[in-house]
Image (cartoon, rainbow, N blue to C red):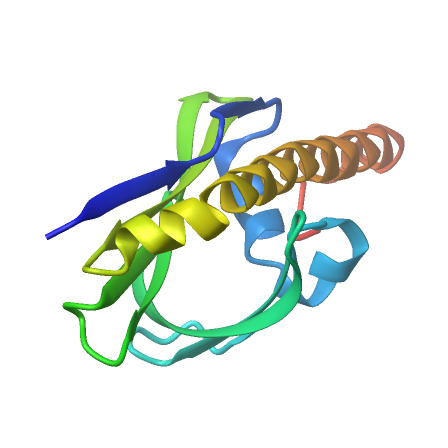
Length: 165
């Protein structure tokens, strides 16, 4: 069986892990900052549909229907799919937020592909997927750090704790 994993860069984000997690799961605002996955529809129930509107670099826009496989707040979320039968192509994208310290975390994502169509998918889409994952990783960093900074400034003025972005 053929296997290949497409990976993003690991990006350090200068915000608490829980805050970055809130930004990552704020699907309603993806179109404001996410150049790769600009729209997500899901109820965050394991086994239920995740509708992803993506813009693959050099490949254009498409809608992918996958299913939520794993949700472990504030560390991991994964969705996946298969084409016709798992032997042809099975994919599972996992996004990771790892706590580095109180005010820093690290984001990375990968998509594990397995099946007879894996070499074809890798050849046609692998580099575009990697570029899209990296675009999202760096955009998440910018979005989370910008919101965190704004919130820190507001906290300083009002004396309140951070909340959902």
